[in-house]
Image (cartoon, rainbow, N blue to C red; front, side, top):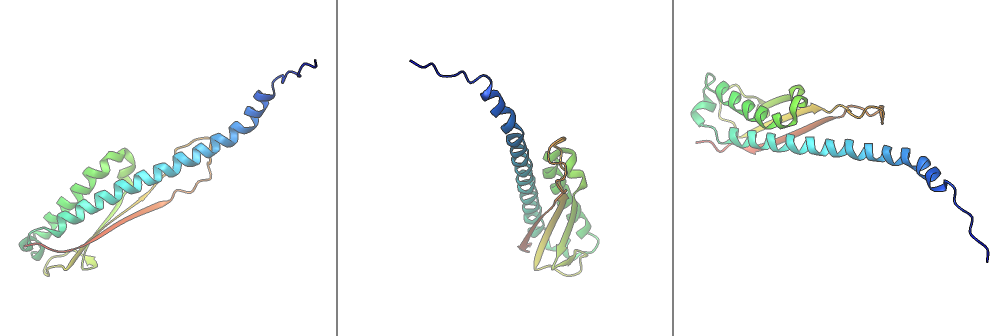
Length: 147
């Protein structure tokens, strides 16, 4: 009977050859998973802020002096919800629009829009360093239904 040859480290060699590829694939998955998570938080925050602004008092939205308070509350809602992302949310750009222009009061809007823009940095040192820092944009528009 012939005895099979011992593999003598063949499994270790195969692991050494495939491990860098597998770790690189894992880094890509983690990065894109983080992008999806960040976008989901941005989308929910912009939706909640738009929902608040779309139901704000008509008196406040019509008054140039009081519309600033409604915008401040809307921004506070956004910052509160974006705060779950930690320090990454500090670089978010927020645009609040009434009828596709900045909310200045004087005219009741028919639509309100909240746009959140955020650049996501690559935090995976040693792997895929050439990843660009993509900008994510979450936008919500709702009809104004204030009383």
